[in-house]
Structures are given as C-alpha cells and as structure tokens.
Amino acid sequence: IGRPIANTRIYLLDGHGQPVPFGAVGELYIGGAGVARGYLNRPDLTAERFLADPFSGKAGARMYRSGDLARYLPDGNLEFLGRNDDQVKIRGFRIEPGEIAARLLEHELVGDAAVVAHADAAGDKRLVAYVVVKMTDGSAEADGAGLAASLRAHLGGLLPDYMVPSAFVRLEALPLTVNGKLDRKALPVPDDDAYARRVYEAPQGEIETLLAGIWAELLGVERVGRHDNFFELGGHSLLAVRLLVRLTEALAVELPLAILFAKPTLAELARESSISLITQEFDSHQLQKLLSSGVGAWIGT
Figure 1 (cartoon, rainbow, N blue to C red):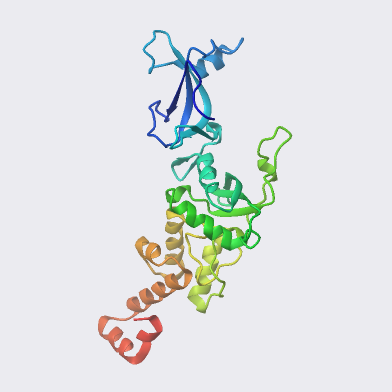
Figure 2 (cartoon, rainbow, N blue to C red):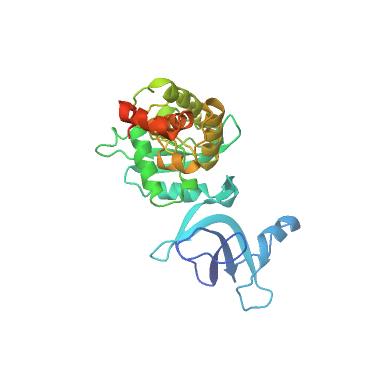
C-alpha cells in the first residue's frame, strides 16, 4: 500500500478500536481532509463505515473504516494482508488468513499463497494453505509431505500453534474468478500428501493398529504410520481430548493430556498405553518380577 498521502491519516486498529502495536495486524481506517461525506443514498452503509475520529483534535472529524487488514513494515510502509471479511474463528481464536498467507510468502519457495478454513466431517474448522511454489532450482522436488513439513516448521517459528494450517496443498496457480478474486469453490480438498508426514511404516501390534484407526477418523486422513505425529497431521488440543476419551473407551486406559504432548507419535503413544495397561493389571511386586524377567526390554524400561 505504501505510505499515507498528504492531508491523510492512517490508523491500524484492533477489534476494540484501539491502535495495534507496530508490526501487528490491524484493520485500516483512513482519516484526514480526504475523507468523503459518505455513500450516496446509503445512510445505513454511511453510518457503518464513516465513524467519528477519536484521534483527531478537530471537531466533527470522521474516519473511514476500510475493512482492509494491514500492518506496518520495518521501513514504515503499509502491507495489505487481506479483507477483514475473511476473518475466521477457530477453537475460540479469531484468525486473519491474510496474515498467515503473508508469512508463507516469506518462505523462499513460496511465490503465491492463500489460506482458507475448511469444515471437516465433524463440523470442526481447520486451516488449509494453498501455495504456488517458485520455479527455482530444487523447487520441483519440494512437493508433498516434504513441502508441508518445511512450511509447517517455517510458520511454527513465526505464529502461534492455532494459526498454523493443518494441511498445505501445492498448486500450479491459485484459481481465480472472472473478477480476479480467489475462487474458493475451485480449491481442491487436501489429500494425504498435504500433511507433514514422516517416512511411512505400518502400525505394529493391536494397540498401534487400534490407535491408527482412531487417529485416521479424528484427523480425517486415510493412512497413519507408526512414526506420524498427531499434531503434524492436524491435531490440536480439542482433538487430543477426544482421542484420549476414545482410548479410554477402547482400552480402559486413562492417560493424562501431557503424555500426548510429550509423546505425540503413534508408536510412542501406543507404548505409553501398553505401560499403563501393564501397571493396571499387576501390583508393584508382580510388576517388578515381570520387569526382571525381560518384559522391561519389551516396553523400553
């Protein structure tokens, strides 16, 4: 966007009408001598968009609420990040997808990006990023799960967890409408390669197989390997609670939520479940005899 022109003031405000810190995302309001009187024959829209300017010392001054999201760059220029109309609410957090897309564009491989919220079969909203990769050396190999892992790590160092998309879909170009806007209806549903995956190894044993089925259902993915990470596949705290409830129903095992955050891979969680089952089944004396007989090696103690 650049900088304000002469006789114009720019405000970046939060949802309460207060200025945001330098570099933070806010809605763009315009004040100064150039602000129009309102919309022709639209008093309702005028009242909604043309507001009293509390930051001006001039009586009767007004400012225009643009609906655009922006932030100040270090050089003092304004960067446009999208429309406030695109703001979504996920798990109680208000999120500006344009801010996430702007961070994706900072990655060396990303030439264009868009972030939207999709509802899964259970009605839960999840963020999905659609990216166009720059045609540079090595970009052809930056595909599928490897690209998803790289972009997830990039955003994870810049944004809170709830703003990191569950899936990253690579496109040749973003689909646009005849008006040049993002055609959301033409965006494909993420496949398994859109998630940050580890090298696949099939689940081993009854508990890993059981867990893999629960994960696949909760996360909406077709295949889960024993080294896959629950959170890298799109899991979050609410889904984690559901997972542990399902685990209790299936195995009569009650694991604390902290265990899943500390041991987020399928194999690790299955191992913790096995340990819990064993400790529930035997008293301390019996358990000590089992450990000394070699069972400890099996459970990794």
